[in-house]
Length: 217
Image 1 (cartoon, rainbow, N blue to C red):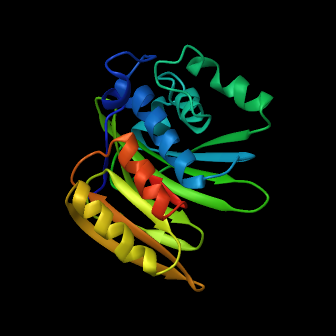
Image 2 (cartoon, rainbow, N blue to C red):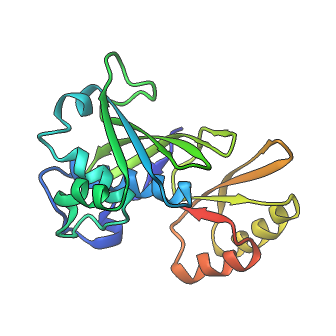
């Protein structure tokens, strides 16, 4: 099973900057996900497009939409079409690469984003499946290699092993945990929780009191 990112319309309603929900609004959502996972200001972004995205990204606004998400802009923000200029002003270098061959994550609307700064690099492989909804199918962060198993929302928690039970106990009172995976690398731990429903802002804030270093997608 792949990981389904909630639709951008669940967040902002039906309003968006066009021209395409799949190629524009969905691209903003992929950018937002990568921004959250990176958890720091980025100085460089490389986007590798596959299949349909490789063919249509310029005409459908996918370029500026992805960058808008990286910058934290909402899909309906009037500045979305100017995101590339905004990125340049903020010192973010952007490169787009049109790849040949099939998508490595099995969807025609695929973008693989590599974000970097002087201290870290991450890679997020996402695809837009229509109606502003995306899937995140692969994440490389802090030496961890993640392939989410369940539908989003997903909660990622960094920290000590005792966070596992503490967070799990809190989450169980909020929603059903569909899948849980623990990753370890160089004495570090990352726990992935695939959840049954979207969390409210106050619920995420409550979890942050137990584990400050977390990302909710």
